[in-house]
Image (cartoon, rainbow, N blue to C red; front, side, top):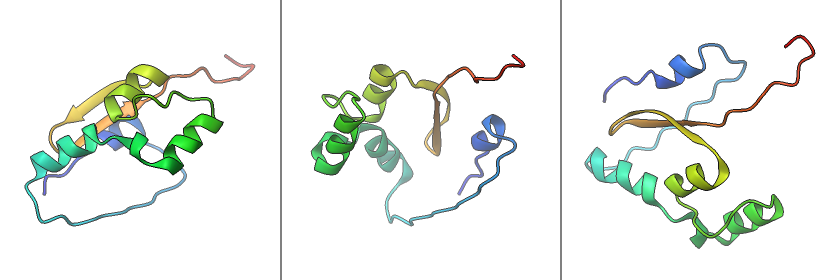
Length: 95
């Protein structure tokens, strides 16, 4: 497996670290594409959680969430990782 470092590029310092791994007996490219295209609206729980947060529920795949909610594609390392982010301003009197 190829080492990926995009998370360290965008979050070089953090206070919590958690690691999960699932081994899938399949070529990586189809799995990467499935993860990007999966339709989350088929999940009643996810649709419910989005509705109570007043978020869009019509198109619930990764690329639509990026477009509809305001996330940004930061960078990708095909087919190993895809980094997305949400830009906001920090509420800080010193800024």
